[in-house]
Length: 436
Ligand code: SAH
Ligand code: SF4
Ligand code: F3S
Image (cartoon, rainbow, N blue to C red; front, top):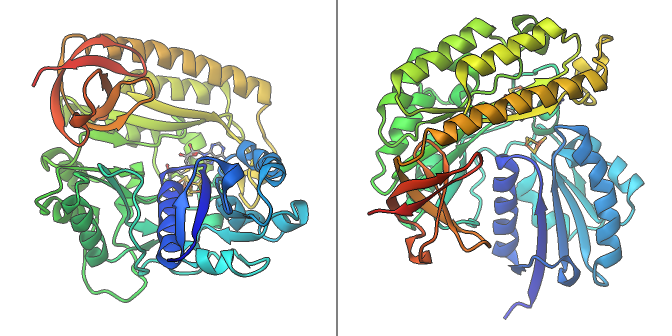
């Protein structure tokens, strides 16, 4: 029997980091007998899987390392992984000598080597893991995250991700299909496809492939797997939302009718400065077309307020898109200047107080929009796939169009789909009763 080691892992950032954490756990467990703990004090290995997209979480990282250093047991190791590892590299050892290794977001498969090599560091962003067969670990038995590409080629002027995750490479179709089949056959009826730019899938593979395949073809191929019931994905890019993609999205019954459309700004002038590649009109055209094609579609978005040079008029354009689309969910943040990015060098940075006031106005208006959306769900019946037992005792699941629905029921409904009558709709969650 190999001795049992305890692993504590803190995952910050986006769904790609969530999947990277699963991959690291799988790799560690394939070599040594690791079990997961939520008590850092008892852990033999403490991993922090970091995010770099805004400055705040990066600042928080060093105070957290300080906390773990104090509470960890003797001999336990601390590893910093993920996007901040990629961008700060060696500087992490200098600022926090208690850190044992630094492993970049593009080097996840080297986790065991990192743990077992003193002061290991690898933050190369040109390392290609697109063909690496990771071992199996999934935090949820009901939903399977699957990477379909790594990296990002877009170079949006505000964004650090291309500098932490390197160039964009699609994962071969055969690997994705094999992974989705295995996960679905073992009970994960919902497949969640991940990439920074999913609808650019198939543009480049690391081994020369003469196969022509795009994201719409990939969705159709995955939907052929019998055990797969629902397919979700994030993030698609508004620029690549051509008619073929919208038609596949609308017409494939296994593709869930919730679309993430990261707007960033409603002003075409600001979108140019961000190098997003689309205009306000294109975005509205695609979003309103989706609303027209699919009755019940939900649309979520990401918004940055206070990008360099954003005037009152530019911000009004963002508010106008909010009014016209009426997003079911938004993730809005103040612009945060990031190292290595072009926009951080622009000389027309917006006063943080003005940006804060704009963000506040945007969020208040969005709350009103969400209240109206919630109210419209009263007495509706939604089909919900249950996947989580909450500490409140409620069982939570998602409707096809991604509304969070909670019911009081036995946990035997986990992994099942039921019709739910919405009796108490709230802004952030709809409460109801299972009717069949
Ligand atoms: N690939 C995705 C986004 C990945 S980053 C896309 O293109 O939409 C997730 C979100 O973080 C972005 O959509 C953006 O809204 C936000 N973000 C990225 N860089 C930022 C910055 N410098 N300041 C504030 N928010 C930022
Ligand atoms: Fe960042 Fe733009 Fe790539 Fe999204 S598409 S990860 S915002 S560079
Ligand atoms: Fe953050 Fe890296 Fe994701 S910077 S948002 S964890 S790609």
